[in-house]
Length: 185
Ligand SMILES: Cc1cc2nc3c(=O)[nH]c(=O)nc-3n(C[C@H](O)[C@H](O)[C@H](O)COP(=O)(O)O)c2cc1C
Image 1 (cartoon, rainbow, N blue to C red):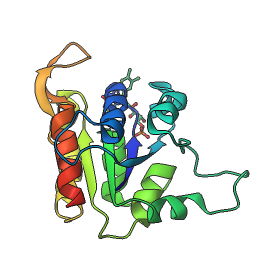
Image 2 (tube, protein in one colour; image 1 turned 45 degrees about the horizontal axis):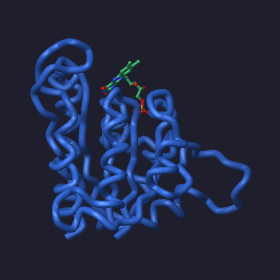
Image 3 (tube, rainbow, N blue to C red; image 1 turned 30 degrees about the vertical axis):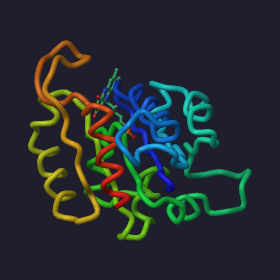
Image 4 (tube, rainbow, N blue to C red; image 1 turned 90 degrees about the vertical axis):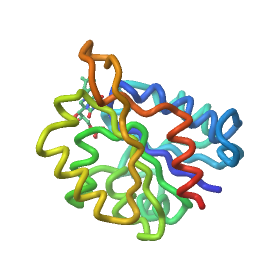
């Protein structure tokens, strides 16, 4: 199956590398391996992990830019028609806001908006606890949960990279892979 993996700009972006590896090569839940993976990174994500890492792990060029001059295809439409499932790992507060409000101001949000509604979108948020509990993020999560296509892999409670303790850590890779497999049906 074809998995488009969106990576947004949180500290947990490095954990998406292992998700890509396991989607391709195995080590996850039954049905979680042997998939084709296309990675789309936000500009912020490239500050945390290089596109080269995801290119090597996915075996495909990584898409990062909405505006390109080296490809005559309209890339966001081409990418939106490709996957059986979209998963965003990690999903930042900013990316959740973009999706909840239908913004299309970067490649990843435009691809999600342009993908047909029958393509499920698995969201694995990760952020500081106070951000996760904020009114804005709660409202954006509720807006997305109202739509059948969006499936959340809830963040875990533990010591966070920022040094605080609480809910907001990226769910473990097994749970994310399981949600992707379930979304693939
Ligand atoms: C060191 C550092 C760590 C960050 N970690 C997170 C995070 O875990 N979750 C989050 O939602 N935002 C985090 N941010 C903020 C995002 O990078 C910022 O909101 C960015 O605009 C997200 O853009 P994107 O959604 O387009 O990837 C972090 C920023 C920095 C500088």
